[in-house]
Length: 93
Image (tube, rainbow, N blue to C red; front, top):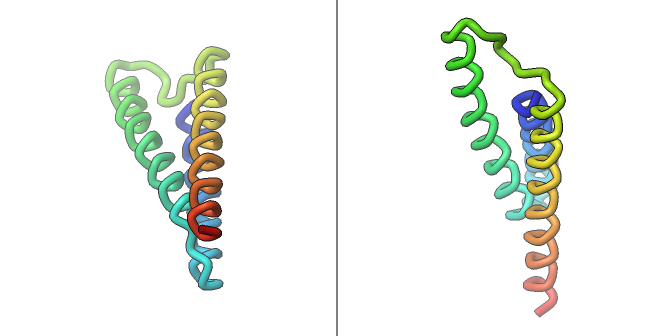
């Protein structure tokens, strides 16, 4: 489940980045967070393939994996918030 949540977050931040870029307001905070989520999605996709090769289900839909996915989502959003605040303070200075 953490793979699904991470891919959804990566797609959302990718859309935000390209919409902002098309409007001339590309944000480094959005870009960094987007790359972070894509990196996590890549990491868990390797784990999903390894699970499938071992004969297990492709996605782990357990409660613990769902909680892990939301923890990763929350941590990514915290990093985004910190980077966005830093970016706005740098523009004002």
